[in-house]
Length: 297
Image (cartoon, rainbow, N blue to C red; front, side, top):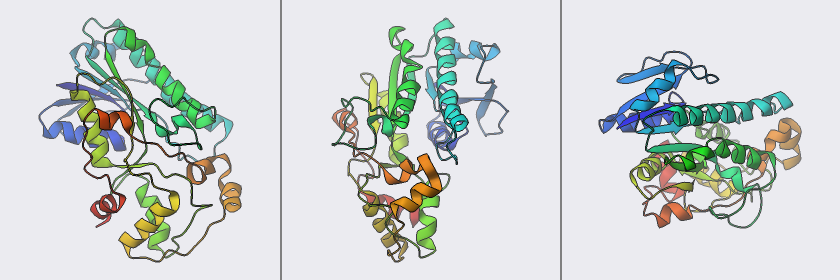
């Protein structure tokens, strides 16, 4: 297959690229500056306008949209929050317009989204749960809606609502492990908030499974089946790293330091990968302890 990835040089895009290349597929990435990646062709775009890159859409079997400014950008000013939206919405609309204008459309389009679609509190969520009204939820809604027009063009659109993706390098795991490695591991806030996670091998495996599964379309939660709280995650990570777990950072302190961005740490709703499991996907790392052992040791 010919696979085009917008955001292909990022953390998740790089993992997907490596997996596709290993199986003999051709990978192309849309990028603002040419990247030197072995066996990968860079296609230049500015992420804002339709120009010569649009012609390359006709060559593609699959297009994957992973662009979006990292939410781990401090502080969350009004301008920063607008950049979160623009980096997701504008590129999505642009890709949808390019595919609509192409004479030979790709058969599959993968749209990135976030598990925060369901909000930061409430009962166990699945793909049938409606979106919440908070900032992160509505950001996910608009991110998804930017390419919704492809549903009427005969393109099989798959929306992946991803949890925190854990990997050895490039993910949030390094940052989360740092205080534990320095013997300051402990509870953050109440510790009872959900910590949505998925191993990088399962994230890549699930995306590839859904692309290959001809009946797969619509939204899928890319999250491990085990519902884990923040305190359970940090306790397990401390055990894997053979470090103590004793230091409590109170909620008020985190909110005072991080402001609105603190919701990424102090809030979270439990969710399950209902549709993914029903489709037949088998998780390689459904258990947190096994996932962290694989990544940290």
